Length: 117
Image (cartoon, rainbow, N blue to C red; front, side):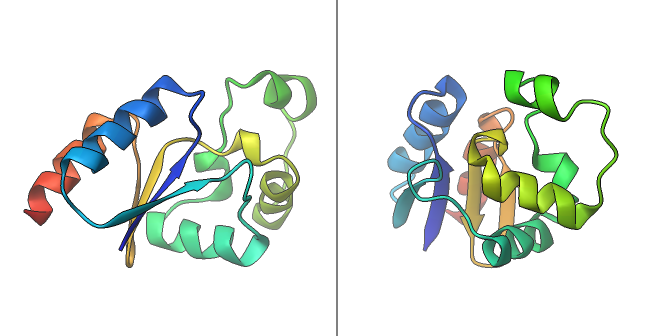
């Protein structure tokens, strides 16, 4: 089943949700602000994305600029930052089994869904 890490206040996330809904794939939505990912889930997500924690942090967010910009942290420390501040997680993110992708732009999600048929 597809999971969309989603926040409704984000236009890109809403656009990705539209793509998922029209794909007729079975899916679930996870509001990662109301239901944040824990450390293990973030580590699993990073493996699926083949990414480092800093790759999925919203560097344009005010919170990042005020508290973290210019800081050099380990991957484990960045994961702790994401656990503490889930709003810093890039969005939207689609998870499909062992595959995950960041929907920036959201058309990446549409292209992936088209390959699934």
